[in-house]
Image 1: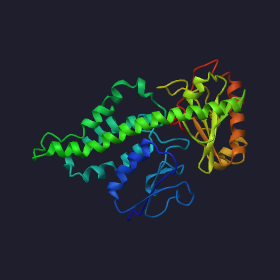
Image 2: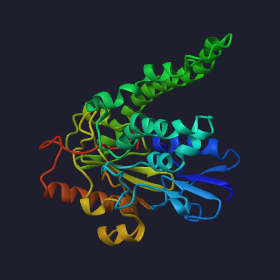
Image 3: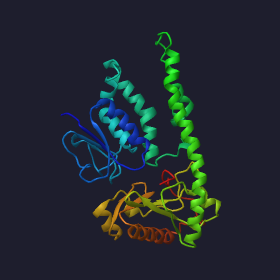
Image 4: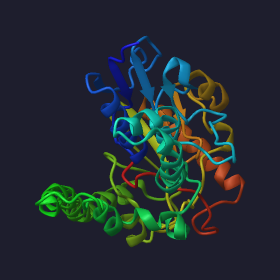
Length: 326
């Protein structure tokens, strides 16, 4: 079957679907890459591969999502992200495209899975804290990754080092410039968060005009009473948690456990909120189709958090919030 469409979700992107796209666009260079949440686009169809969206995992149908409940797990019980699912199914074909000898395919596949794919999977699922991961992430630090762009030992062609340097330069530049732009944007966000805090008063829910980094602004204001943040997200609205500090997966409060991994009618039924659309398995973000619906979800989340005696003042427990932009 000819693959004509590669479909992942629209909106903000994460490492797992971006890296999945690296694999798939090499294997299917003539396929159209589509970023969408349209119901018709994320349904399995002939010639279509769907990943990191769709609420199903069925390799035969060509759909590779990991947000549903129960979520797909490795044999050792560790969770997959879409990258891990794509790598498990298509990784060997990807390696063959580099003319790796057949007798080395399994060893390279397993090594890359263990040293590169698994850390991405664990971070995406909130199953590991990068700052506490130690050796697991030793090969994924930026300096090490940039040095992997050097020529391999037996590339002895004249000018190989210079060509590799030239190819690595835009990659390094992209990281430097993106980091600087992000730091400047955080300062702009603080001003917007400050205004929102003043409007919110004593509410436990902070409403922002758009997705943005917010924790620094909340902490700078000493606004310890906030448990959750809501903001528009394209045509939808997002409800997100607030991390307790950098380098942790812990939140001031989690979203209700009963919502985890549910979407659409199932989430509406459990939450009682018409317009509820999705809650991540990790309980750090939920989505609704309307502002009134997401505010109702926020109220329910606050009520449950307080009933469980989870508050920013009483506890520094939680989970990974979000891209911190939401």
